[in-house]
Length: 187
Image (cartoon, rainbow, N blue to C red; front, side, top):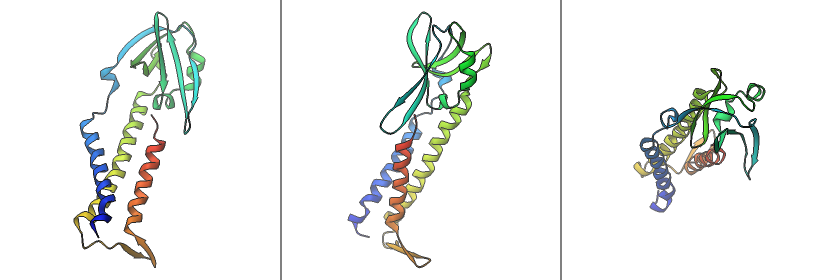
């Protein structure tokens, strides 16, 4: 393979190495360590909100508390693992609730020792997203490394069941999967 043909492989190699560097040097935040647990009284009944953007629909719950001008939200995976029906019927204006928040985002909410959000399920969901993306990036790393390391030994196409499969197509297919995943990744 010529050097000009290897540029996409070098780009893929750098992208996958960058992903692993990001994972290694960026700790996975356990919000229980950095957040504050508070007990407050709701100043109004929580509002379920839907926000539409060009590519997604985001759902959230907005909460306001007595004596606090901040607006708190339940969004992303925390919203997905919220016990919505029970929350709607049991969390009302004037209720005293205990919650864990970080930057006005709620990660846990309970009333009378009954938890309405599954913190462990939402954290497992986030970790699984990172693991899935790491597997994809590892495959990208291997696919990009082979033509760079084995310069003259890599054929540009392989015959599989009488179908000519170009090595570049494998690379591009994996790139498309990564782009699709990143495009649809949720907060």
